[in-house]
Length: 253
Image (tube, rainbow, N blue to C red; front, side, top):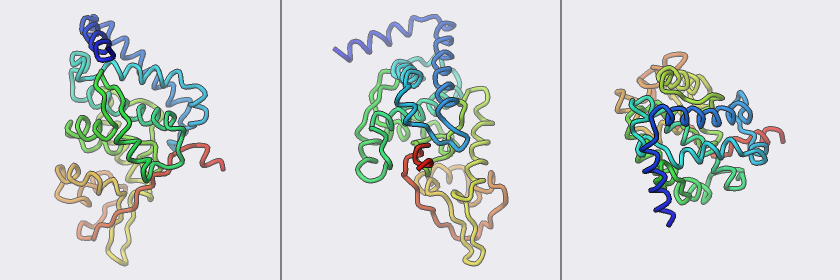
């Protein structure tokens, strides 16, 4: 019965005039924009306690994601930029919702990681999938490695969560901005001249093949966005990823 209902919703969605569909998308993204403005601070930390008490905007956006996607309604997302922007916003919103729905865990490490990313399913344009499948089967194949500076699982080791949504028209500049910001933080990029070592966020190890597809080496890639050039003959080490949930309440204690 549930599958029939979803199919009916999607079939109706294809009959909605383009202008109305675009207005609906703008209205949905406005919900997400309010969530980011109200519940995220300049450090990218989320007020999960406050959000759990006032989840209406987030739930409205998650409901939109459940019924509309570039795969279910391709006419609404005619460019690669529009598809990538949708998926980044959707992934981040679903991760945020997942934290609340999981009773705001302190960390996503251990078995919590398996449940959070692998077992939990969300509807995206009528298709149920885990966050792991969403990232690896839908988002990464779009071919822009800079998404790894924008996708946010709400952990401390993630990139800083911006307080505004990603948009198709501004996407290229936004992704470059996030790459520079990520590599401008010492927690993600460190140079040890005495040992001739460059230490990088473990994100570069998780998605090494994506970055190497665009560059002859990780240091060469990093030098595109780093505030200062790193020697390419240095050895690379990885900084262990911090799976602590990036909760504003954590920093108050």
